[in-house]
Each structure stands twice: as structure tokens, then as C-alpha cells.
Length: 389
View: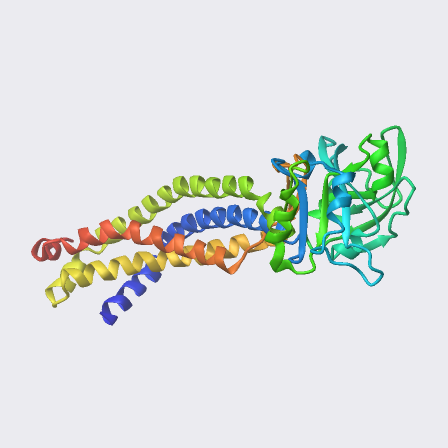
């Protein structure tokens, strides 16, 4: 069998033009497949990086996102005194009141309007959340019309440069700083003082959500039970990381379905391309196949050898497809198809799992493309094969 496989490998090199053409077709399919999966992975990773594992988020039951949630101040005051809520060294509850509002801003390049999340926060947010770093400028000051913008949204939207002035609700808001959030979705938001943003947008006496540092994250279920126990509140608590990751659910499913749909149709074409290459290869090597059968190689060995040849060809195409897709890793993009209807910027992420799936997809195309030609080669009568010119 090793002699037969060596013979197949030499034939791939000898017919390098046809080999390269078939491998290139598979490479393109694999590259598209990987890029689509890396889009879904990047979006999910960005949302997963948004929260902390020991934080809970309290939102209104039935709300699709923070945008449609409301936590009245009276209910907030009942929750923060619960024993499940951690406290800082001064004994203050580690709770961040947050108000989420949509505002429209022009995109860079085409000037088209896009929705941007404006988050009203208090200084406590920097103690409750982690990974928030002011990279340029300074933090907003309480009581003033000042904003800080995520680095990613500042690169995608006009008017959020450091020192720029944004006109909203008949007020001029100054961008005094830019921040990063460990690659999370907060980098697609603009933040300001809750007690300034709330009255300006006529959203007072409450917040969209409460982010609570839990004294013991393993007792989240107890805290959620306490939150739900009061029928007037109609609130619920969830782990912050899980809540934001769940926001990716529908879009992630759409991207996975799109990847499957596109790859299926392109993959069918690639399979037929590989099949055509193998049929042409077998037609050109009919006498050689007859000779192999005459000297004792079984039909099973012929099938295995030609299927392996097709898989090797597809594997090479898969590796090439991975190499083609690699440069997109880390490139920034954005989507507005989120439950909050706001633009979320994220980066393409090529994980080892995605690359492995791409190679597996290539190998499966090679197997399917080589199986029928291999069976045809094995079924060639020895006498007629030897008579071929």
C-alpha cells in the first residue's frame, strides 16, 4: 500500500496544474467558511468579554435588552441592602446604576446615520466593572455635560474624537476621554454621568439596569429568587457574562446558518471540481491502473489509494484556505443587528476550533469528490485497461 500511495503522490506532482486548480477551488470555499465562522466567534467573544463572572445584572422581566428595561429607584433601594450584594471597604454596596439610551450619529466614510448606545453611569461603575481603562484624555466629571467614548466606536463614528463636541437634546456634550474595555462591547458605547444624561433625556427616578457585585457568585440563584419574590418589582437577576453573551444568540445563529448555507452551495461546486479532476486523472492513467491491478493490487487498494489522493489534494486546499483567511484575524467590523439596535464593533476571531473545522470541511469535500472516481478506477477491467493507449 505504501508503494501505491507513493505513486499517487508522484502523480499529484506530475499533474501539478490540475492539482493546483482543484486545490485553489477548495481553498476559496474553506476561506469563506472560516471568515463567516470567525465573524460569529468575534461577536460572541466581544459580548462575553463585557461582564465579570462575579457580577449579576438586574433587569426588567420580559425585556429583550437593557434598552427596553426599567428598574425604578424605589425597587433599586430595596435590592442594594440585600446580604447577597458585596460592599466596598467603606461599607457601600457595590452597585452600578446604568441608563442605556440610543442616539443617532453619522458613520465615518459614508456619513450614514447609525445607532450608538449612550450609557449613563455613576463613578461606582469603575469599582463594580473591571478592565475599563481611559487611554486618552480624562474621565467625565459628575454634573457636567462630558462624555467618554469607546475606542472602537470613536473610530467608526464621526464627532467622537477627543475634544470634539456632540450636540444632543439641545446641549453641547464634550468628549473628554477615550477608553478601552478589554475588547468587550462597551468599547462600542459612549458614557456620561447618569445624573446628567437622565434628566437631559427625561429618564429619571430609575435606571435601565443594575450591575451588582455578588458577595458569593455561587448564590446567584438565591439572589434571583429574592429579586423575583416581590411581585411589584417584576425584575430578574442573571450573571452579567451570561446575560451579555445571550444577546449574541439570534445574530450568532444567523451567522452560523449563513456560513452553512453559503458553504453548502460553494462546497457542492468544489466537490464536483475535485471529482472532475479525479475523473480526468483516472482517464489519463487507465493503463497504469490496469498495470497495478495486473501485478496484484486489489480493487480495495485502488479505491483507498485514489480516495487518499483526493483527500491529500483537498487537505492542501484546506491549508491554503486557512492561510488565505488568517489576515482577517483581528480586523475590526461592526453590526447593528443586536437586541439593543445599536452598532457593536468587534474583531474577527480565528480560533483553533474554527481552523480545525475548516480543515475537516476540506477533507470531507476531498473524500466525497474522490470516492466515485476511485470506485470507477477500481472497477476497470484489467484487460480493457491494459489495451488503452
